[in-house]
Length: 160
Image 1 (cartoon, rainbow, N blue to C red):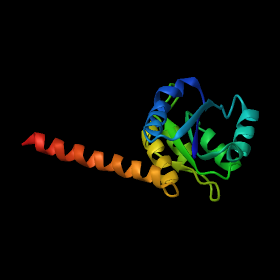
Image 2 (image 1 turned 60 degrees about the vertical axis):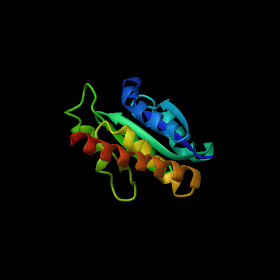
Image 3 (image 1 turned 120 degrees about the vertical axis):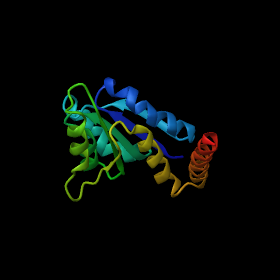
Image 4 (image 1 turned 90 degrees about the vertical axis):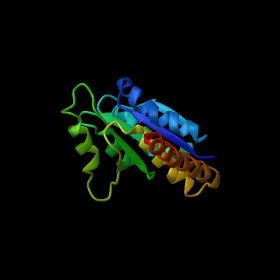
């Protein structure tokens, strides 16, 4: 069974990152959440990044605000796919610093980047990655997307 690691730079990121936790639990995907600060706990960051693949993780979702080094540093250390969630934090420049820190990675160190505060989409993307090799998860993603389509059709009908 696949497992997703969700990490964030500080506890203040949890209200945003909870969206990823919730959507993944909805897909019945095991999630482990931790706080790993790129700047305050670099040893923990190195340990997490170098060993995540040996602990059963399939994908890592990393959320960070401000300078947002966490996703890129984890991606530099881990062979797993990393999805970065830029977070508009109290010390952020309208979130752009976080977006650009995660988005503008050098060649060879990819980080899939979702929208500012887009942890829900990070969770869905992680489920889609797992679904590429797990039919049960794939079927749940298909059902989820079908539900989105039904909601839009219902909203359109409600306009009439």
